[in-house]
Length: 314
Image (cartoon, rainbow, N blue to C red; front, side, top):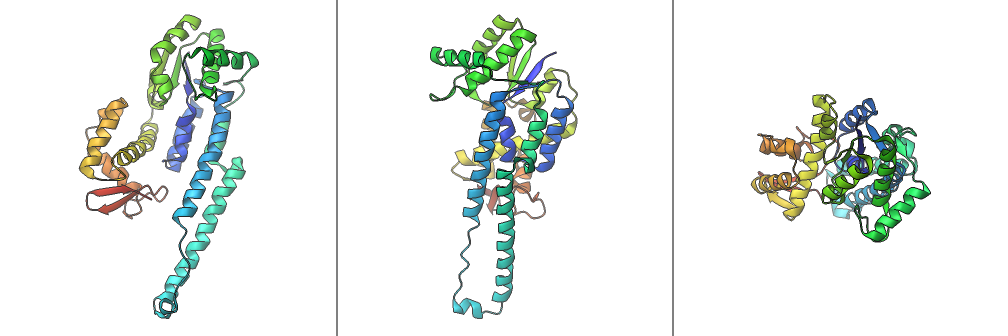
């Protein structure tokens, strides 16, 4: 039986652009098929560290974006409509405080963080490879030799993860599928595949999609899991497209840039999507409070400047 290792950043992406129901769908699917799932102690530690950073950045960003000047001149206060405005503002500040408190609570109490709680329940002793001294020593030697995977010059986290996977599979001798968007794996797939085969006698496959990995091992995928991953990734693609286009662009420019991103990232399912433009418009609307009839009410990512012109929310 093959094992599937899912890179930490795939899970961290759930904090950036997702719907709660999509997280629930994906995590339920992974838990149901956990016999294929494998992870490392290093990956769990990286998730814990980066979870704190991402939530802290989210909190700071929310505070900055919602910091409205509460002052008002005597003239403004004399207006007949000011009373309702003032009442609305008081309600706004009360709700703002609740959101800040809730995010802060999730930062300090990981048990109240649904994403982290589900991730931890997925990672058990029987599917987590511990970072032994031997693994860390091997990772350090790999770093000194300049062999991939390569972390930044100050750490060897990626090396520890790879050596952990190798150590486990040298004993168990199974095919391994790595799900990662990290170029460390994609750019060195031939080197890593050859090394894996030489040490285990088995095959290594590197892919970018959870659904692709589970298709490879023969798991039947319900439409809900495919749609959940689509929702997660389409927002990433559109955010990247708008960022590349300077933060603001016409729909035509977004379509063209998104198509290039899909092509260069080899997103097979999206290449086959004959309604890409309709999908992009739908995602823009569902993740924008400017379109109340379509807005999902969770992540407010995009701003409609005018008909056919969109920008990233500041």
